Length: 193
Image (cartoon, rainbow, N blue to C red; front, side):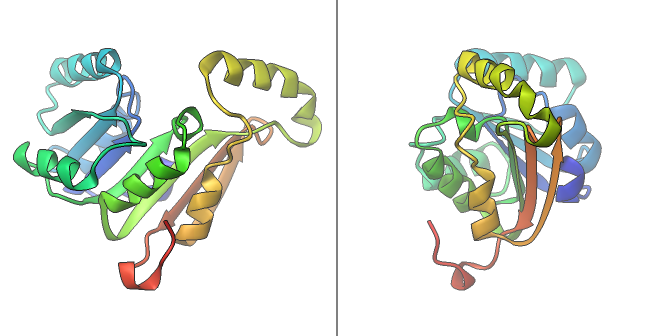
C-alpha cells in the first residue's frame, strides 16, 4: 500500500491507528528526514512503543497523538500537529489493519479524510474472508480477526472506493488482505461523509 501511495521526500503522511509504528520505517524511506509522519492511536501503550522506536532510530520528524479516531475533533488534531511542527493537513494518509477494529469505522474514515489536503493520496489495508481456493481458510481467518477484535465483514476499503478517484487495488493471501489507494478529490467535488 505504501508503494501505491507514491509518497515523495518532504511530504507529511498520517498513519491512522499507527499502533507501535510498524509502518514508520517504510514511511521514513519515502518521506525522508525533511518529511513528517503523524501517528494517531488511542492506545497510550502502543504510542509509547512507537515513541521508543522513533527515538531509537533518531527520527525527529515523527509526531504522535493519542486520540480515538472515531471521536476525535479534526480541528483540534490539526492544531496539535501544527504546534508540534507539522502542517495542519497531511499530503497522504493510510490506515493498516485498523478500521476494522474501530466502531463506527466510518467516523474514523471521515476524520482521516478531514485531516488531509485536497488531492491527498489515501490508503486502506484491511481484511476480509479469504476467497477462491483460499476460502477453506475462512474459519482460521475469522478466529484470528475475532481474537484481535476486528470485524472481518467490515470491508472499510469500500469507503475509499466510494470517496476517492484514481483508485488502485491489490490483494494478498487468497484475498484475505485487501489494499486500496486513491486520491481525495477537492472538497467541492465530493459530498460524502
